[in-house]
Length: 206
Image (cartoon, rainbow, N blue to C red; front, top):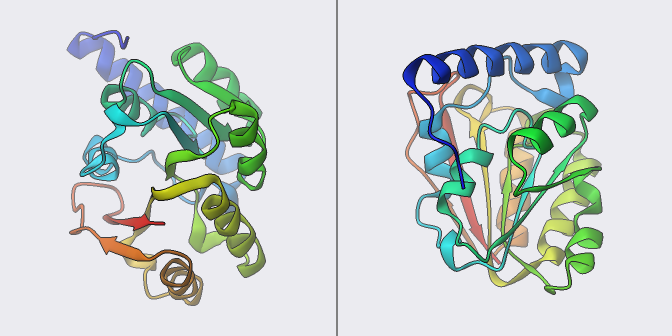
């Protein structure tokens, strides 16, 4: 269950999340990839069209401050198991405190198949990613994405996003080609303009 909050508490929580995100960016700018957390509108776009309420296992990669985590928890069913893999140790501690239902794991996204196997559920139905793909070397992109595909059930869905201003970069173009190679379907959302910076969502079906 997710606790409802008054406008004042939501404002304080939003400011706190902004500061947490900025500190994470200053500690590891290439790993964080942005200077502020994703908007709720982008979070909703990340789960739009998905049936998370019917999923057995949902995995979030790189939850950071939990900008997507709250919306994921609002969408999943009572029996859905939710895992999250996060590298930042401080973020792990905060996520565990803030979202006790989520099994937050302090490890790299490359380890995804191991934790899906340990879940005993066979495969993940959805993998939702907040990782900064355009900031990654090609080798890391490929390794992680191959592991995502291995962890997904047939027909499973992988969702991620890209910042509009970075879509023309070589790393971003390479990443889109990788998605088209690995998945049988790739859908691109309309631009979420009310995000800083504006972004679009990739929804890929295995």
